[in-house]
Image (cartoon, rainbow, N blue to C red; front, side, top):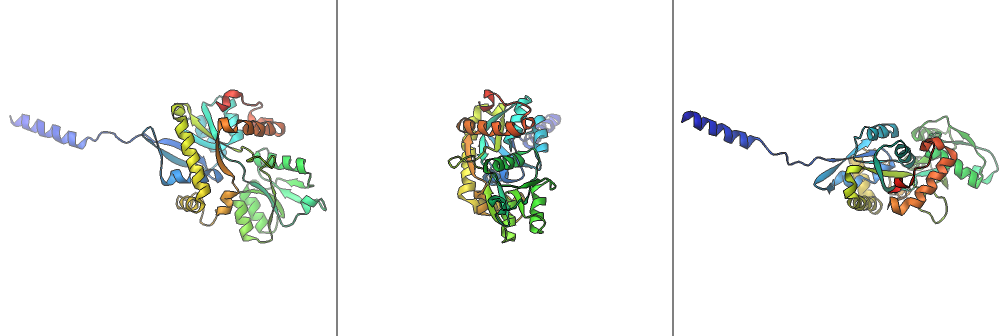
Length: 304
């Protein structure tokens, strides 16, 4: 009898201490550090839930690390350059294109407009040879014909910004948030050109892609709705978005301003809504750097 009582007591204690695993496994969202993170500020503050699973945002510091994470299947949703998304698709990496949230962050800045007037031939500093900034810069110069000597001695936008502020660079291509920092710290600098617009009626170039894993296909409409809401939050409440991003140490205090968010041209469009713009952008990339796409254009399934 004593043994039976001890056994019952032990059983009760075990049942009390064994908690059922009620926590849903998170849906992992991988976001490149930079303008893409602005789109997900709201998710960082109030993680949405899909099918009972909370979305957990992880910041990744480079496109190469992002591609590695996707090849390993370590992300359920990911944000990366559109040319990288097309390249991964052509390699058979099993992710689907949800849409495009950012339509341009690249601008030409300088201390005067001699480069545009053709009165002289100044040096224009560009970073990322063979990547989107380089390609869009070369395309803009071909279309508008300002006479610059291109210089690729700086490898990052931060280095170019530091060169501008140190007076070593007079004309440069910069994206946000480095553009806003440079303009704020040096009143002699001015915006000389917007490199993001193929024409006056377009949103811009579909430079950024959001991908999702096949397992989330049944939640596609929910994902699109949440992305649209998150983009609108960043656009309509930029001060709140900045507060969240600074709190999460994505951007240092003072790096972002409402103007810099506005210059990122944030507006979520699904793959079907943006297909024509995405196709036009990828065709442009293919003209200048076919290797960036894996030597071929993605087929129709890329947009499905």
